[in-house]
Length: 170
Image (cartoon, rainbow, N blue to C red; front, top):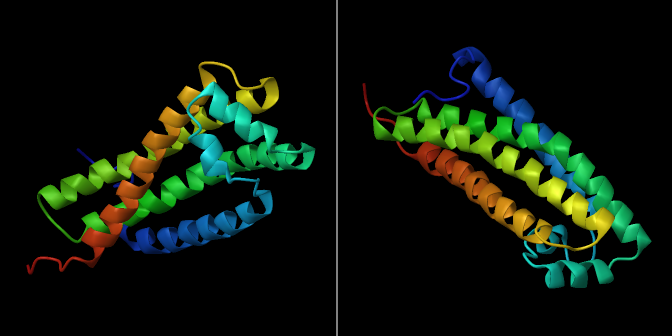
């Protein structure tokens, strides 16, 4: 399996990673302006109509507006964090051969899988926010959030662990 960003020239990989990581961090900080009571992650993982409805009951109109804007803003975040993670896995994989390199390709694709599940999750969350908690949206959002978090953190862990692992001698 080839890494999704393997075609990126070696000389551009590190500068692109630094760029996308920087933008990811700026956007992550900007999300602090869209905080809602209980946190957005609780809303993402509510999983049931009752839990989602209970969360919505704690939000006033300002919190609902913040959540709505945050969900829309997250669509900008998705490709940015996916590129940062995929480039990180590409840099880490490039230092190794064999199964560690192959695992990097899987982790690179996983970054984009995370973003795709994030997009579906946000659509479900928007549906709940605009129409009230009803099946199947809380369950869809929670399932997509779980998959997103798995691939998101798996990519980061791969990049950190394999990136810090001593490369084999030539």
